[in-house]
Length: 377
Image 1: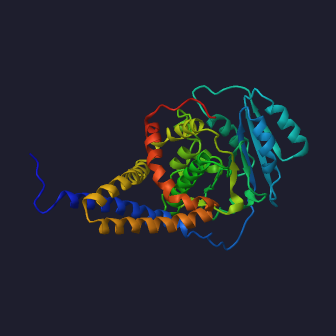
Image 2: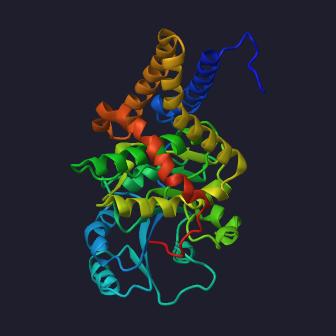
Image 3: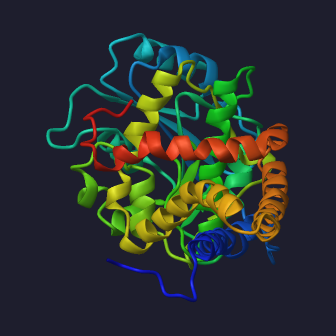
């Protein structure tokens, strides 16, 4: 029978385990997330207005386009820019709506696709066609259900480009609404951004979100577009960035005027389906990114159970002291990051939302092994 060494009690094992988990969590908060909390826009010797091609893919999105497209078409931007809308085999009134917009906005470029691409499920084919039609080197991507929060969205996002920059990661929050579900969705969106923006600042960019993402056409063509991930329904944003992003070619923009806003799902079931589809691409990430993300998630899940066990079986004063250390550092970083990303109203509930993440991981962890659906909406 296995026996513990005489110099190590069960209570000490629980406390040691708790300290180890806490140390892992603090490593992520201090090494990664602290960078976003104290991020300042880098100074530039000179500012340049790059010509920009905004690309939006739509499939049966007439209602969303009617509400949101004017926000992209009415941007205040002194340099040359265009808005490309790829109408991918829509069966609603999308084509006629776009033709009406074209009468008013001459910078609108419509690409109508009336067939599917065999063997390329998801959104990659229409997006590739939009990129091929783009007249400018700097491309800015968003979705038909998103609207820029300001008329300076294009200007702020393109300003993220410096010498050597080929990718700019932006933030796309959800509209604030009453109710618990809206807060859960917005916190998860914030938490995801906390990770991918902080990792980029630490030289480990691993994803971006297609609701607000910019990269150069040359980068897309040089890497043969989505050819290596065409078999995956999703991943037109995160997998492509995971493949081509480096510490040298990636920057972030978190100016409030650079955000794009969208409506969150109305029911928990719809949200679960949406997130499940998104997470099926995680298994294709680079090994180092999968390791870093998995270690963080595992330590997050184990933190509270280890705290409770250590609290009961070890000296509560020591256990509580370690817990409060993590609580204080986490609270400071959350406060600053939520303020930067316009989510300050979530801060009073951050500790409850952090506790909820245990349930979140349990619900969505199986998605990493599920076969993705062959759809892009």
